[in-house]
Image 1 (spheres, rainbow, N blue to C red):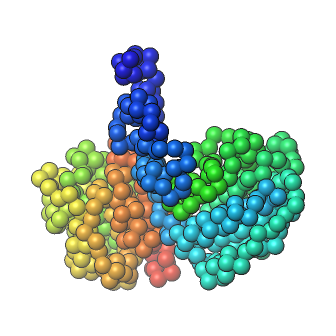
Image 2: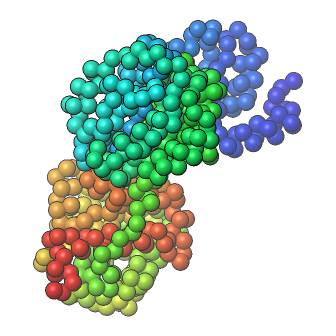
Image 3: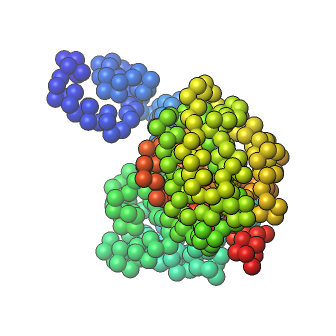
Amino acid sequence: MCLSLDPVYYNTATAVWRSTDLFAISLAKYTTANEALIDFTRSADTVAQINSISDLTPNSAVVQTMSNFIFKSAPQQPVPLKAVQSDIVIMIDVTSAMIPAAFNNTLSWLNNFVQYFTISKQFTQISLVLYDTSVRTGSFNLVGDSATLSQKLTGLQWPNSTEPKLNLLGAVQYITNTVLTPDQGWRQQSTYVLVVAINTQIVNTCDDIKSKGTFNLAQKADVYGMALTGDLAVESYLYCIIPPFPRMNFAKAVPYSFLIQSGLTDTVYDNEVSRSYQLWTNRQPFNTPIPMNLLQIDIIFLVDQSMHLSQSAFMRLQDLIANFAVIGALNVSSSATQLSVISYDKDFFDGGSFALTSATNLNDLTARINGLQWNSGSSAVSFNISGAIDYLTTQVLPQRQAGRAAGVVIFSSSPYATAPSDVQIQKLNSMSGVYGVDVTGLGAAPNYLLQVTKFNNLNIRRLSNAGVLNPNGDIETMQRLNSFISNVANSPNFRNKNLGR
């Protein structure tokens, strides 16, 4: 029977297709099974063949193909790891179950893993906790210097522990009460804890771990688990310390030799660190040190009107900008706040733009915003942000009042852009604060907005699609824009002038 003609099979397969991507591996000698797998995954490109199980080695072509598939189908990093600002704690189970080969393989992976990050006191700090029933020699707390980190990792030796069981509760309490403390350099910001376990036995009960350790650690960090064995006992006790309904808070490297750079398990944690940092930034309070109606600032909205911006999305942006002005009760005048909208695709679009000095009061400003035109004839696939930055720094920002703060908000729709130079980016950031909004969620944020904001992730807003900008105003985006503009106006260079003191 052809599987695709079986209605029971088809209904089941359809449900699977709607919820996940599929990849399959078959033994070449089983031709019928191979055909069925192609039918099930819907593509010959997502079925790989091997001659025997022994062909499944970390560096084999099949495993690399599978790794590439996982990388492409999994949610991608919202923030490049080099731009992440997190404190990362790696705890490794070094009980007697951690044999030398497994330890050395894990250490090799860790050496590669930390290379993804910018190791510094400003960006990422790394802690390593080696634990059996107590902390072992070789552990270190929150290193924020790449040379020191490399030295400490290079000098690690296999602990050769004789302890038969892992004291997981002790490890969790040590990380919570000793490592993640201000005295050790913990910055009380984005924090990620990864527990790497191999022993099938622990000293504690799951109830003890949850009641005496899990909650307190979860108040300080996002917690993840990694198993270096397929034994379900390890997976079971790791779920005592990670969220009950994890997204991808748990993964296995089975056998442990599959824990390699760019492998499946590595890719999971790379992406999760990035998302953990993004979630942390999303949870930060929206601080507006100066009420919007008291601001003295020039605000420029740069709108990417390439072909990726639909008419409905453009109208939503119009509503957002108008609501930003009206709800914030901006005091629009030459002596208080001025606002401009500049539209660009590959060139300046006059119909979607007006200058800083165009509006002299709030009513005039809202009329100007409502009169903006959508660039219906744009055929630009790429946003010429390089040209737009030149236009801002030579034609728009020089119009601002002398000594006044300025904030530039970039609404990007295209995932592609004409790359600006470092000189252009530096000039723009020296003349104004810069905030980026990925309106369509197609990739503008990681592709170029982070670069333009000088990798300040707090100045990036990522929307899943333009529909998030609901007609009545997207509340979160409004809050973030208010916070950004108010903080720019409150910067040390402008603070006294902006309150009229």
